[in-house]
Image (cartoon, rainbow, N blue to C red):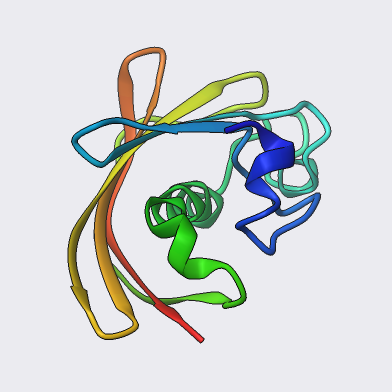
Length: 136
């Protein structure tokens, strides 16, 4: 799916749509990509002269990728974080980097979804964690 198709499922819009494209393989694993642009609002003040993507934005990139695992269920709903657990940051992410996310659904209970995700840049693990969200 490209950005135009993603907008059919995610309510996010620029500047908060943080997935450029995604494929979900036959094992139900999401493979998403997002290129960090030089002029991203979150890099302008974090930090001037040495822009680094904030950890919460890395988590948001992973969260949007996770939500697309259940794309047919999210239509007409809003996805809201219900938990971010076991998050670890290993490498910085900078403008120009291509973030590659792998995500999988671990469990579902009612309208709650539990996923695990990893964000890599150039093969280096930058961020990983367990994310949960609710459909409201």
